[in-house]
Amino acid sequence: MPLQRMDNVGIVVDDLDAAIAFFTELGMELEGRMPIEGRWAENVVGLDDMRSEIAMMRIPNAPGRIELAKYHTPKAITPKPEITPANTLGLHRVMFAVDDIEDTLARLRAHGAELVGEVTRYEDSYLLCYLRGPSGIILALAEQPS
Image 1 (tube, one colour):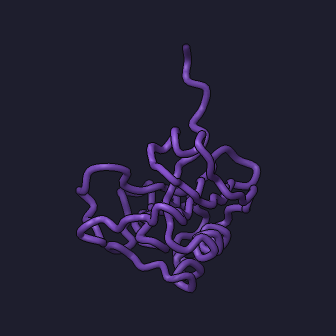
Image 2 (image 1 turned 135 degrees about the vertical axis):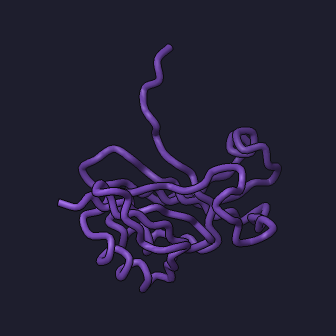
Image 3 (image 1 turned 90 degrees about the vertical axis):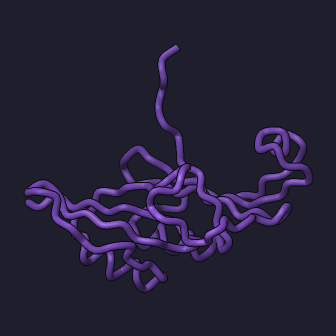
């Protein structure tokens, strides 16, 4: 059976409103927001007494969605160390192609974003950077110079 598509990337956050504002500033749109609870949800994620709220963010006129989840019960746990380095096992980052990396950084900094390293040029192909957003989310930005 062939793979059809990647539907979304799920990210657990501690402040759903702040994460929605952050991804909206990036250029995504809120597709919907709803509570998730009940036995079916507990069975899917493997957590008893699970109650959460999700917000689905989409890229306008393009494929690609992010599902932001705020867990009310059980409470989300914080990894140790809280700020994990780039070589930590597991989901690392989500990359977005942007028209203007400096403008995007300036807008996201107003929502608490901080550069992980620095904006760097890869050959003559891309300007690249990693940044940390709400709940420690790591995004990568890539600008292809014209």
